[in-house]
Amino acid sequence: MTAQRKPRIALMGEFSAGKSTLSNLLLGARPLPEKVTATRLSPVWMSHGTDAPYRVDVDGSTEPVSIDQLINVPVHETRVIRLFLESDILDVCDLIDFPGISDPNMSSTVWERVLTEVDAVIWCTHATQAWRQSESAVWDTIPQLVRDNSILLITRFDKLTTENDRRRVLKRVMRETKGQFAGTFPISLIQALQAGDDPDKWDASGAGPFVNHLIDMIQRLSELAARTPEGLYNYANVTQLPAPVMAPVTPRRVMRPTESDQTAKPRLPANTAAFTDPIIRSS
Ligand SMILES: Nc1nc2c(ncn2[C@@H]2O[C@H](COP(=O)(O)OP(=O)(O)O)[C@@H](O)[C@H]2O)c(=O)[nH]1
Ligand SMILES: [Mg+2]
Image 1 (cartoon, rainbow, N blue to C red):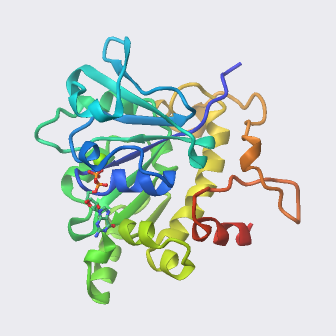
Image 2 (spheres, rainbow, N blue to C red):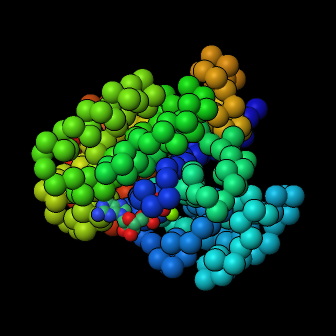
């Protein structure tokens, strides 16, 4: 029988596209200081819990690390940094914050060796230079099963100042990535972070539809991830996966029965009412 595990969602994109900002938004917390996320880090794999952080060496050995000293972790000798947090979203999935894909100072092997372990990707593309050739080239290598469960976020949408620009960028990106993502959402991560309890600001940031889609995606991924200890990256399509052995375990604290039936949806959790309210009403 395969071990039960949570879906692993990678946050990918170019340097400065908003990956770490997105992880702060989803976690409802800022686990790493700005000076740490601004530097070039190995992939940071976040799971639920209270364990102390550690690094996994490329040879498989592990070593404790302190948050303040992550800057000094040797990037090329480190497979992954493991971080444990009690954020609600980590009840239902693991998040892996990847380094920028085309960083001239970092070999792509630094993140490629972790890529095989992922189930899905949230790809952040910078609105003012969205979906560059370098991004498209990496995405071309991603198996269809992962693509079918992945989201494209057009970040920094607030930087596009005219309605015409916004429409043009969205249209072009949608055309160039047709059939390659399960969903595409324009978003201002900064505005979403600043929305606080204000549902209008939350919706205006573009976060609403993205988060609703993400919840459905995590639900679907939980079922697929329960069928294999390996990342979905290792399978070309769903028919290659081992058959389901048992119903996937969804942690009880995120179960919420609906009125019409007894099925439950994961509730994407955050510290603001704006984050959860629209979701609760729609379920
Ligand atoms: N205006 C604006 N700034 C953003 C947005 N998303 C991220 N940023 C800023 O862009 C910078 C790089 O973001 P970061 O999350 O560190 O990018 P990463 O390299 O992909 O992890 C930070 O200063 C963020 O505050 C956005 O949607 N709008
Ligand atoms: Mg980052």
